[in-house]
Amino acid sequence: MKTKIYFVCPTNKFASGGVKQIYRQVETLNKNGFEAYLLLKKKGKKESWFNNNVPIKVNPYLFKELKYLYKGKKINFFKKLTLSFLKTQSVDIEKDAILVFPEIYGPNIHKLAPENSKVIFNQNCYYTFGYFSIYENYRETPYTHSKTLATIVASEDAERYLKYTFPNSTVFKMRLGIDNQIFNYSETKKKQICFMPRKLGDDVTQVICILKQRNALKGWNLVAIDNKTEQEVAEIMKESAIFLSFNHKEGFGLPPAEAMSCGCYVIGYSGQGGKEYLKPEFSMPVEDGNIIEFVQKIEEAIKIYEENSQEILSKGKLSSHFILENYSLKNEINDTVNIWNNINK
Image (cartoon, rainbow, N blue to C red; front, side):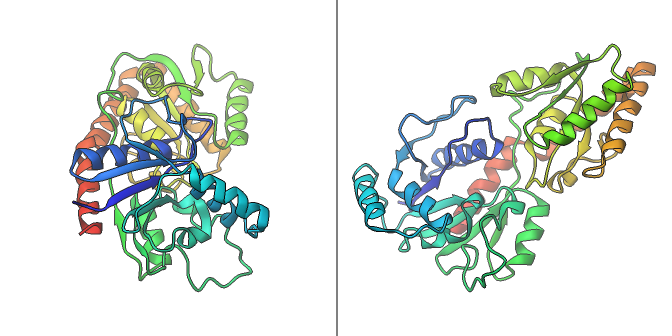
């Protein structure tokens, strides 16, 4: 019997690609001979904006302790009472189990459940040093601690970052997979531009307002994708000719890849992690933060589409083929199983 694996997972108020990937790993592992669980703070907090089927355990004690640690709070008498009560409400974690933490939980992950081995699922390398202080010397970090078995990343950029920063740590790269049953190519496109407004709101506002000021969107529909289910997101992407990428310091950046899978012509920021798929052969990369270049490239794409829509649509088809060939669910599943077979020997 293989060791139990518990994935510590935050609950967000919004749809999050990072959370979806944690669920997916748990699902994949259970379908391939592992015993893996999603570890949540509270009952009834399972995500409902995408389809999933994962076994769940609840441990409010661990999440409260984690909060105290990453905020640097001292455990006084009253906090000890709180922790003692929460422990009675929490699942027992076996001493030989593996705990998997997202990178967002900061510099003290290794101090939790010190007897347990740990893996860090680092989906955004640019969050690695969240809550670290530049005024402290870190003799040990979660990435260099003896109980940390490995770090899993999701892009070439993140792999370079982690291997350079922690040269003696074990880093595995997995390829994220796009579900082609949901995000699949559609050649039926409207004169529609879609985007996600949650990140880089200032950049979104500037780009859209400049386009409107210049009357560049005549005849085109703008659709902000927000508070939608996974299926609703895919439907908007499949009917849109263009997707605007506002990736910001991403470990990978799922939305532009999903849009490409649906046949959108993607214009915008790579956020570093997206450099491996935002290729000029079938998309329009923009230098991160360059607002005027962003607007100019949208106007250029609109002009091309108006003169010869097939030129833009054919690039959307090329991008869909590239994504579904390189970032298939089959590749993600194979990478996940191979990585965990190496970790859990």
